[in-house]
Amino acid sequence: MDRRGPLRGANRHKQELLLSLLRAVREEKGLHQTDVAYALGHPQSFVSKYEAGARRLDLLELKDVCDAVGVELGEFVRRFEAVLEGSQETKRKTRGRRRGD
Picture 1: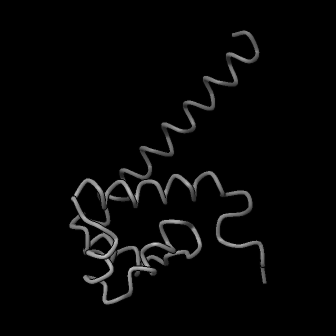
Picture 2 (picture 1 turned 180 degrees about the vertical axis):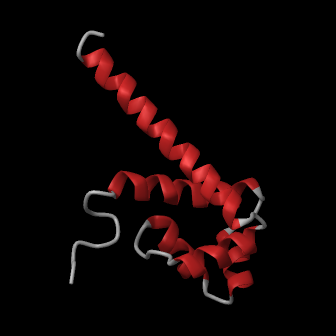
């Protein structure tokens, strides 16, 4: 079993982008962690832990979170893919500048 924790390893950057998007979507809707936690039937610490990366969400939990904040799961995934693409594009541009391109 991997004991490195949810935010370690090869996918750390992608996980951080996901967490940022989860927080951003909640804040865009004007919701606090306690609001989302109440809608999910969990304590506020549940929301805090997944936003901080101390806890991973599975797909079913992510769907519940999306429902709680009022965004469709498909829309959330599209936004996440756009964030990933933007991040990859930034990396490509940064590498090009370092090479003198």
